[in-house]
Length: 431
Ligand SMILES: [Zn+2]
Image (cartoon, rainbow, N blue to C red; front, side):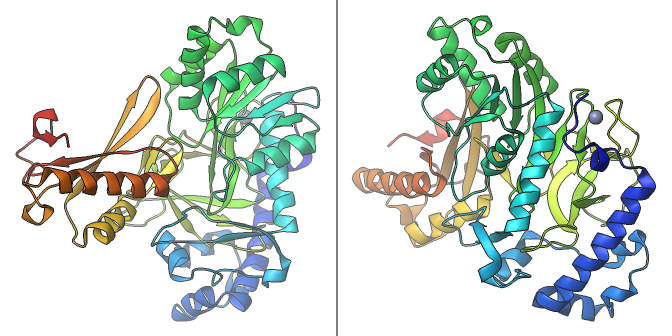
């Protein structure tokens, strides 16, 4: 088993606890001093950072949720002056609920370390050619993987998301050995390889690191068998770091979470009580190395169980189960997290009223599709086909621009979302 930083990744549990306590105390001091939101919320419960004497006392502190980040847009959650920030990302562009995450030089350095650990654990070294087929942009996504792979000394192809035939050509011609993408992308790639008569066995591909959306063991087996590679899961979230927060080693029995950078907790999302290891609940993360935007007890919305049992790979950091469910209303389509409310706000802006709507996510030919169903009503010029068509086209354009890929918009008849009715094709208007 290969390690990127064995001394950190295989610390004893007591060493981990000690390091976490020191880093937590220093993080609490910094946020109390520099972030108004935390100063205020600590004062409300009469807590001073120096009061914290053991890790369990973290549970006394209030949670941070996405609304807090939005309320403090743009720089309210920053714990350093802007001149120390070298990178800015936002998980939600064009949104009414915007948030900004900053990275100092040290933050980027730590991010590279986290992803270098991930890649080394699945066998990547300087002889590898790493193709990152995920969109590079203001949402963090693949930048961390690039940093980590370059730190290892591998050759990086920042391919981004693009047409499948071009991706296949690069994999073949550049002798890509490691693919980093969403699992859905890998399935699409397999389909196109079959159409192009490209036999995966003739390629140099040996491993895939897949993330940014939930996927099953069945999908893993399908990708491994049909692409002749091994496949591991990786989990990240833009609010914390992008990629690299937790990842599978080759044992594929849970995702190691870097406990020298995060303190994970699992809570009951309703009662907010801490749950014991092995019981699934909402993953809550406290960052203990981040300088620019430290987060205390951030509610991720992801459902997972945690285990502190040592892994047979030799790593001592806790493992979380694969994330297949969420307890918030985030819908993940094509690796993009969409809050339905964001779509609702765009509908309100464009239509001048706030119609009922539903998001219909489907998967066809290994590709995610999103259809926005909008309930028609009298104010929607029910009888004027031309106006309806213009309205649907305008919605289609705005929503596709917002998401960065094509969405379908369909009008449905009034009452279609009534639970007594099931939305089906006969109730959808094609205009
Ligand atoms: Zn392991």
